[in-house]
Amino acid sequence: MHTVKHWFSHSLAAQALLLFVLGLGLGAVFRRDGHPALWAVQSLVYTAVIVGILAYQRRRTSLATGARPGTVVDLNRRIRHREVPKDPEERAVMRRLVEDQLGKMERGSRWQPYWLGFMGLIAVGMLVLGFTTGSPAFPVVFAVGVIAFCCWIVWMRKRAMELYQHMRSALRERG
Image 1 (cartoon, helix red, strand yellow):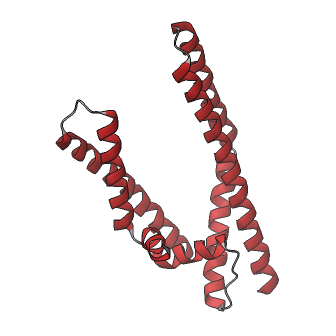
Image 2 (cartoon, rainbow, N blue to C red):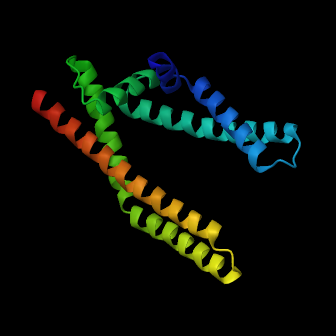
Image 3 (spheres, one colour):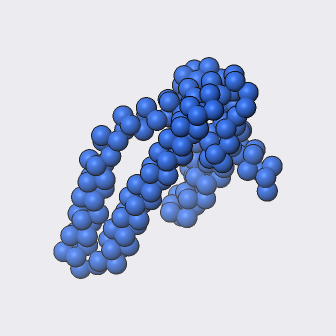
């Protein structure tokens, strides 16, 4: 299991394969009347767009830290496990990574209330639409899903901020 997880976290090709298979499966489930070739083409396009965005983000982070993308992935794993590197060069790269990620999160924090409010507005709109049309089952499930998703976003952001702040202080103490 560890090698599969390692493969998915390090290999962009593995992530692309997973995205393609998931896109193909979702196309088969939600577009049963469509041709299977259409499912494959749509899945391929979605995979190409998402992998392009992911590769751009990895390259940007790698340029900001001065490390290879594979090294950045390893450092992110070490941050999640709260492991402080002993090598001074690795510590410097991790310090730049932590500062870069914290900067991105702090810049994004000013927009978070607006995005959460927008998601809440969509959920309320779906509820109103569902109750006025007489079939509230799907809108209620959708609204609960949106609320759960928003709670998950807030929880994950809080957890990531705690991890990065912990690593920032640990790097300052030992460096």
